[in-house]
Length: 107
Length: 244
Image (cartoon, rainbow over all chains, first blue to last red; front, side, top):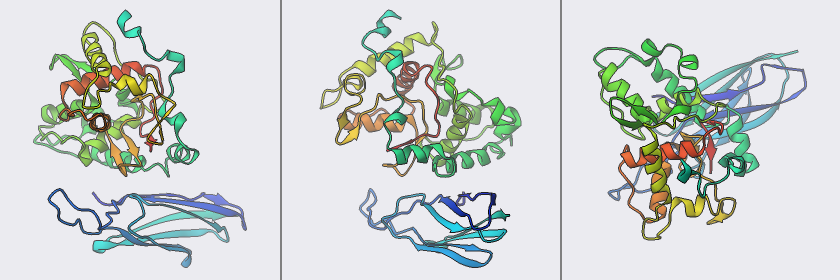
């Protein structure tokens, strides 16, 4: 089963309004520091970066590290400037990649 | 049932573990887009429509739309199975469907797929009251569950009751001690960083008491689950809940 992401973006906003964006993605975030039952090191498998673009312009970016819990929940704010698309992009170990989009109507 | 009425928390003093959550954890559970259990619900929704087994049937082929057909179902489990002659929990019910109707291999306990299906089915009862049946068929099992709830066990010589009836509201190792109601399972536990079943939680408590846990799916667990659901009768189903 592939990763799942949940995005919470207001569908409508007034121009200039500060909006909250919430994102949740399924990922085990294996730290790379743990040992399995037979003593071998469990290889690191984490999401390493997350970005959000608003109509092509990057408005939020963050790096993620092994201390971040499974299923990272990232929330941030932006100013609703124009109608369009918010594009979310997660990149991680072992070629992990996930994209999601959400539309917003600004009046 | 007079013996069952003894030494239990009065019905109006029962509290869901939700009430002892931090404000942040409550907010996490309340908003579906921040509740990590939602990811598992979505996995379950996908599995509901997937054709499996030799008969090539999906859950939806028999049960249709889960939002109507599964509404209230989890709130009634564990329920008596005439075929088995004993109560079975929702995990076993799903596996019965798999082996008998779909002619597929049963799913392992705590496997991603079984958790996804039980969480998806459980979500359909969210907001409904816990309503397990207490009749002449199930009563011996409720009483068996109650006996194991009250029995001291393990190297620490504790019973479930010692913590969850006598000391709820206090702290155990810095963490609020809850009454131990099963109304939010399967739930997302922050300590596990994943969703888990009630049996996983029971196993956790047993290891904590230095007792030997039963194997997943054991009749003793199902009886205990049934007793706990009866103890939580009328409380609101929160599946998928969030707990520390």
